[in-house]
Image 1 (cartoon, one colour):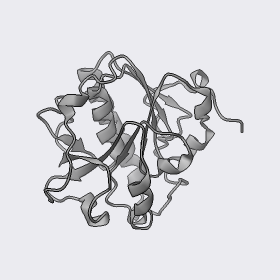
Image 2 (image 1 turned 60 degrees about the vertical axis):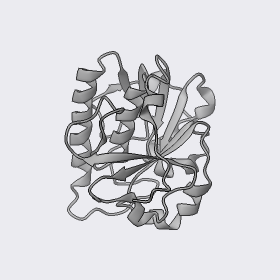
Image 3 (image 1 turned 90 degrees about the vertical axis):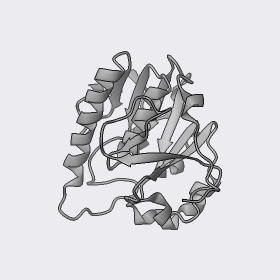
Length: 221
């Protein structure tokens, strides 16, 4: 791993957004129903291809080393500048290491190390972020650590029938694996962050969180 990489200091991020609300954008097709201009006093967090939605992100988190499409859009990640921070996860043990897909990593990004599976991490000052097959689970650990009191999930459809960068999965197991892992992160959050409320907007296959679609103004159909 290059010594030139600039690493995230999670101690500086602890409770940075204590009591605030985050809207966490995934890359599923229902994020296109969401009109960000009708929402105020929130922090926008996006992952990967959400940079193409035209929503000014406060945080961008990148880390899907399994997606070959990243090779074709690397310059977009280099050039995108969120309002606060751009983060990228680096897998310890070289499991699906993002640097294989993104040589030289991503410009102007703070890096953080991850571990493959194991327990989700609450004390990110001393523990590595647990990687569970989707960058979304990295983000949930980080947002909880930052002290948010509410997180709205937008575009986390857990359904690969369509999507911003849809590709076929051999064996068809990705859909259920995502749902299983969301169940695990919910158990972790309920136990370690009982004050944190997580709700979903326009849920498709992810139905374990409260449906708060009526609380969030949607874009016109």
